[in-house]
Length: 416
Image 1 (cartoon, rainbow, N blue to C red):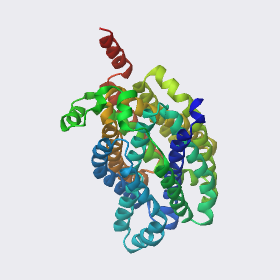
Image 2: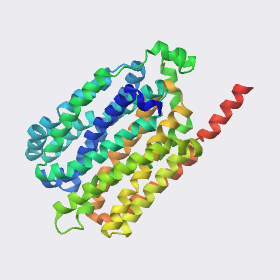
Image 3: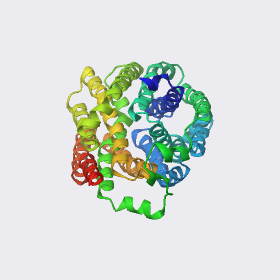
């Protein structure tokens, strides 16, 4: 409760809020915009998301190393904010004309630019704020819940905005970026020398070396972590890319379906924020590895359920179930990274193990699922997707070391 009295806690929360306001506005309504405003079919829409993922693949290794070397410096975060500022003008005056000139070329250019802000940029935002909150002894999940609140707010107002003017969501993203920039400029984080002396082990004082980074790749848990991320986080995003259109297809009036979906998405993310308060305690009890496996199993149920139970209220339920899945996944990812790997490399492991692996999966499966939707229809494609989710989650869970056993071993060694 003392955290609530500190202005810095609210500053970090505000940064999460306005970044994920942008994230939610774009990802919730980009599928509708691509289909209804840009008039793209599912295969070309999938190419947009694949282009976003490919660009992120290039950015993530670079971003990770740079952010770990920068530590708590804001330069890379500031670059992401600068890219966010131009989303509104870019979409209205460049992205749409490019799509109309050549759909494939426009999809690649537009996806690449959006990735600077979103698929690639999110790793910078998450890694910087996680490290900053850890420095200030805040529970990551409690600060991260502001992102969920932003998602709920965006889904609620975004549906109204999109129906009135499809371009308004992108201009709202630009406005949010202005506020985000102000919050980033004003936030004060403890000096890193103070950090080394007070909050973390002295080991963190030493610089990051090439050998440190290469050791990550020798750790089997890293590869198991990558697999489980593909099965959960990747498939979560791929599932959500076209699910709004699938949901709206059960309505006679597609615009009515879009509005209803925005309301459901709003409820989902507000529920998500509530679960985010309790999730850190729950993950501390069961372990981060088990939390990741549980999140993957919930996604499996959601995808398979969407294939077989297609009443409107059941489709709404599958969406709402994400309010449990997302907190489990987000909190478990950060706790597993800081619990198993060298904390000096938290940004690198996050960028490579989470974002890089996730984007590889999105690059492949966005296009694959786009084709499957067209050839097999949504329901049969969802059955295939659910099988893929289960295979990746089980394989990753088998390979990963348990963080609870890892902590017990370290405690025993320290006592000895």
